[in-house]
Length: 250
Image 1: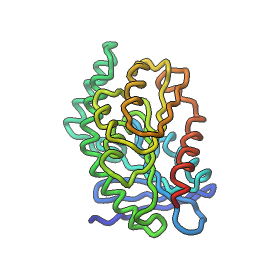
Image 2: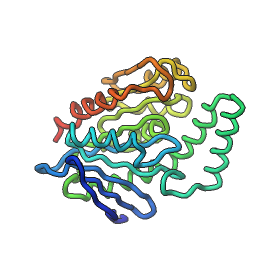
Image 3: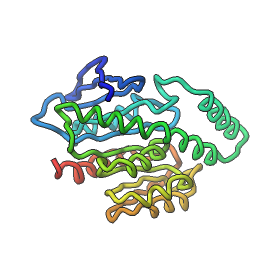
Image 4: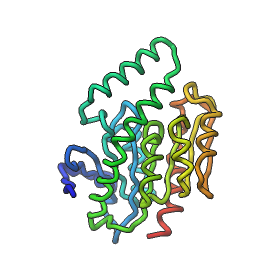
C-alpha cells in the first residue's frame, strides 16, 4: 500500500489543515486542533469544474470540524484541481461547453462524463481511505461518512455501494440515469438535497434518484431555487446528520 505523505500544515480557528499526497493523488485533511482520542472521518467530494479547496469545500469542512468534531478529507477528482486532464477529459469538457453555448441540455454530457470519472475515482477514494485509517487519530474500524453534491454524488453513490466502511452519506443534485441501479444497493442512512426549480435537473429526476435508495432511513431536502441556489443552512443540516449517525458509534 502506498504511504500518505503530508506536504504542508497550517491551523486557524481551531482547525488543522494538512495537504497530503498519496502517489499522484493530491488531497487535504482538516482536523480539530485539539481533542482527546480518535474522531470519525467524513470523506467529502467536490463538484465538477472545482477542486479540493474550493470555497464551498473549505466552508463545509470547517463546519464539520468545529461543529461536529470530525476529520474531513477531500481529494482532487481526476482531471480537476492539481491533476492533469486526459484527452478524454478535454473532449468531454469541450462537448459540455458546446452544448451549453447551443442551449442544449447539459445532462446527457454530464451524466456520461461523471460516470467515467467515477470509474477512475472510486478506486482512488478507497486507497485514500485505507491510508487515512492508518493514521492514529483516525484508525481502522471507526465510522466513516461521505458528503458530496453534483459530480461528487456521481462518484459517491458507487463508492458507498462498493465500500462497507461508509456508514452514512449526504448526496444531492444529480440525475438518476447512471446511478439509480447502484443506489438500489445502498442501505445506509442517506440525506438527499435538491433544488425544486433546478434548470438542469427536473424535479422528477431528483425524486426518482431519491426513491431508488434502498435505505430504511432516508430524508429528502427540497428547497426553492435554481441549481446553484441551495441555501447555506443545508450544510448545517449535513453536520447534524453526521453527528446523529457517526458520533454514537465512536
